[in-house]
Length: 375
Image 1 (cartoon, rainbow, N blue to C red):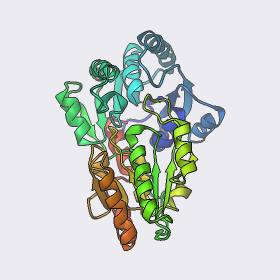
Image 2 (cartoon, helix red, strand yellow):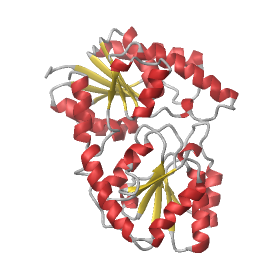
Image 3 (cartoon, rainbow, N blue to C red):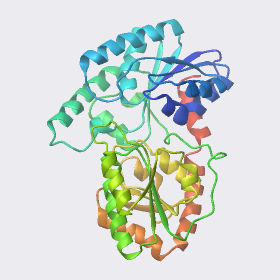
Image 4 (cartoon, one colour):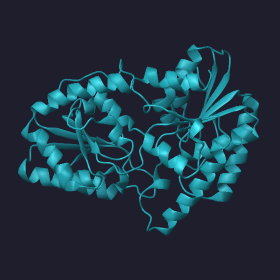
């Protein structure tokens, strides 16, 4: 093991870096490395939380969404200026814009070892080919990914579909790809909760984007409640500036109609404890959804789509049910299976916990990444 390296993780949201990659940074500090977290939106509390695990922070300018070449080039130059004084040995970029501009900035700043983490393909690769704007963003993303990933040593990818697509599109050499099982979950923190069989409660936690299957979830709630009005449907997540974000007025109308409960963007653990089944009917290009991994760790059965990333979390019929994307009828049928057979909530929940222990332990995921980066 090489010790005493200077390492930086570059992301587009400070909270996301802490929530998803804090344990990785903490592990690197414990190994004797100097670790930095770079994001455009640090506040005092987030900086204090990073400081508690021995990680230094640095701000830089970055527009998280949108395509503005002039702004992005200015931000790229600014990031180079932030990186140079840090005298880094190694950098890992996470999320589409940090992967692109963070990797290029690291190359320009003379950082010798550069890595990228592709945690899903996101909006730029959404299935919306009839939109001229979408096609333009897709073409730009492919060109920029190809340019940036050529500057990397390793590219971590969370599901085989994304890896296959990136190789097919010529965005990355297959010998650079290192597969990892999602973000992983700290199994000592996310512990099983007692199963909830009455009232049957379905929980969806996600950013409020159309592609997360929010409309399908709400329509399924409408149909189920017409026959089983005691069934609960809880929607967790904040509004999003993404072009396909759902408006507050739309969400509030669902709440007013009595279809869903919406506490907003809140810590999910207490809400998962109230869940019978976790639902994510996503047709977004996920990596491997962290929300599903957390629900599995808490012993919750899963209903999700047979789509890239999501399908990696469910052995159909064992720890949950896979449904076709955008298929409301199939979603309703899956939900009714748990209402009609509440014993499945118990048995499939136990199978979820066993599967997450086998595949999504964060210690195993981090060990794979640290080894591949030579740290």
